[in-house]
Image 1: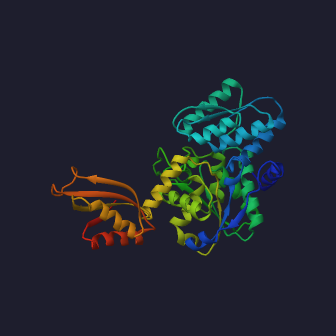
Image 2: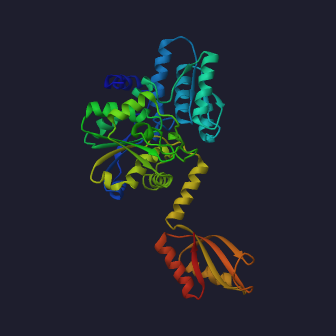
Image 3: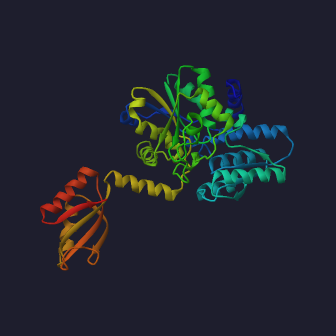
Length: 400
């Protein structure tokens, strides 16, 4: 089992090779969730993920062994980049097996670190099996993304830094995929501060560790915006540590994660991927669980696909009423559209799109439905725009 001594040795080994990231309070998020929230910005690592810690620790081990063999790993992206970067830095050949659905930004960055990228299968499990096959056929060292003591020890250095920066933390909230980060942090934190509360978070679509530890049978999905923690098989080493050390495991929904990504972007001006926002998603979904506590969150990664980020931003604007579809019904006569757009402009909203519906409507033939996509300042402002249209004699309603 990984010990505090292993993690402290990893911390000494990593000095000068990875970034000691900031751990600072977010006053705005603290006010919103009712807890004192401290953020550990692991998305600022060179490869934009905490995975660099474990990968570096393992690569140094392999390089020191000096047997000349290359390494092979399977990953949806962050472990891949960590292994590829530190393998290149230490002169090791690296092959990375990635599922075909992996975001392009992660594939290209991994290739940019000199790794041979092999796209195989639609799941991490399929990629894992192929990576083992390559390890056997090409005499490569398999570098597991989480179920490896050197990897776990490297990830545990996150907790050392957090408790050094903020010794008064009551609770650590950590996302779980395979469990390497939570396992390493739990070992370190429990040894340094036995009374600290350790909470793991999984997406409801991939509750593998939750099921393994609690004996539940929640269904495992096929996709999630938190692809970094979309792991179909709980680790053996990590499961044992988490079962022993974690105080609670929580599940969050896709909408919770989307909201958390957007909050971090808008409030903290920092970009995180879905997995990196899972901790904040738990605070948003279960505020009473953490109220009044000093909570440490790990922003574990920032490698998000730009198209996914665009979708999250737009969906968040829709939920907040800042982007809305409005249907206005009126007689189809010259000048009507000009009147409607004038009223919207006077009310301070901006028009993104305009669609006339003459054929696909139940109105009388001489009438028209005009659908507008509006930018507003939020739901109260949207209500004022609708009221202004109704006052002018138009039928107006928001379309869901």
